[in-house]
Image: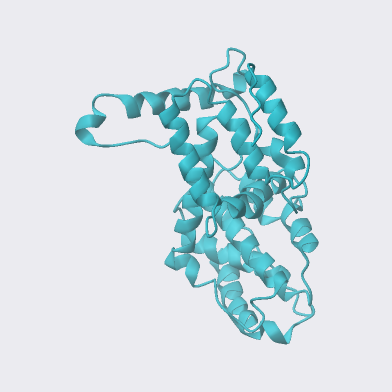
Length: 294
């Protein structure tokens, strides 16, 4: 074991980045953990240990850390800007670096985030909480400017929990059906697209018309699967980031009704697959309901 001791924190993290640029590369989330821990320089050790324990728990086998980054948050943050979101690599970690909420040079547009940050802290630390046992979560949004440090770790934990709640929702489970070809890579890409767009809707509009929104998200996502004999992730990527995609509409919409007016028209002459017959039948049922909803 070689011990190298540095007196300057900046040099320490530069050394960390330099050493891990050689040999087997660290995962993107490992680099982000190091960056945001450095941003917690004013937090106490107990708070740092708490976020590290939660982080490592989700990073272990069976945890959701890698998936929530690569399959959901990275892609949605990119798709909402019309950009490619295919693979989350070490070159893309700046997507999850943002601003120091305690900085004296915080841009004016971050005043809303600053006030939410201060109010949430004050509420949770008030003596009254010892009586009513209540707590308030910071109002995270998928596309928010990342708040460096502790809020970043909260942001990731929050969406891991939101994904779990989504998968356990009966309104969602009915769409996660098994059919002959459901295990193919293209079908798994489509399944993740469905969950991603629904997560974005839930994030923005909560339970408002959620049953109708789930149906719409299913019809829109699986339209791609049913109209193509083969689905590669490049197809999903282009479909999701297109200017007329449901994801882009949810991002710009002010009300849930704007989203629910979106109409999906399936091409009945498109290529059909024998391995998606079970899915096709379900899709037709919900497509009919979706078209009749407006």
